[in-house]
Image 1 (cartoon, helix red, strand yellow):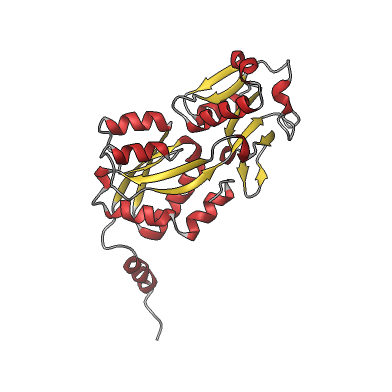
Image 2 (image 1 turned 90 degrees about the horizontal axis):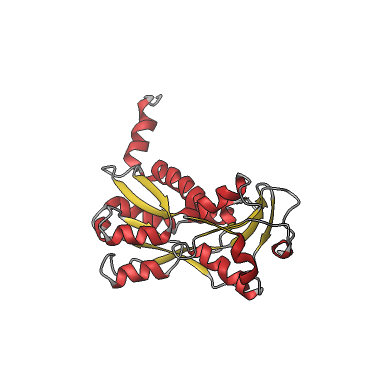
Length: 248
C-alpha cells in the first residue's frame, strides 16, 4: 500500500526535539565563516536556532562581565573563557578547545606576499594591518611574530589597527593596507587560498592560538546551549572547522 505523502514529513518532525530552542552565541570574529556554516547545519539537524554575534574577544569579555545576554562564548583564546569561569560568569567544567587558529600574512594582490614573509622587510610597504593586540588574540600573535623576526620596532609606524580580525581583513581587502596579519580561516577554504597571496605563519613563531568555548551562566539550563556545545564536537562540525584551515 502506498504511504501517505505526509508520512516522510511526520518522520522528519519526530526526529527533531520536542521543542525548538534558541541559543545566543558570542563568536570571535576569526570564526565568522565556519560558525555561520555550522549554525545553519545545526539548525537543520536539530531544529534549534543559534543566533550569532561576532566581535573581538576582549570586547566580548567586557560585555559578558557587564551582563550581556549570551548563552555561549566561542573565544579566540583560552585565557578569556578561563577567566570568566574563575570569576563565576560561566558554568564550571564546560570549557573546551573547539579549534586551534592559524595566522597568515596576506595581501589581496596575487604577487605581493612571498612564502617566507620577507615582504615585511620591504621599504615600499607603507601600511600593515593587524587586529588590536590588546583585545584580539590574533593581533597579539602577530606582535609575537614580528618580535621573533626582529622587525617590531621598524614596523610599528606602519600599523593600521582593526578593532578585530574582521576589520584587519577589510583594511587589506579594500586596499587601505598593502598587507596584513589575518586569520587563515578568512582566506582559506578546502585546502587552498581563496585569493591574493599569503605567508602561512609557522606555528612556532607564536604561542598556540587555542580557541575555547564555554557555557555562560545564562545558558546553564537551555537545551539549545547543550545541543550546540555537543554539536561543536561532532564530526560534521569538525569537518567544517578543518576546511577553514584550523587545527583540532
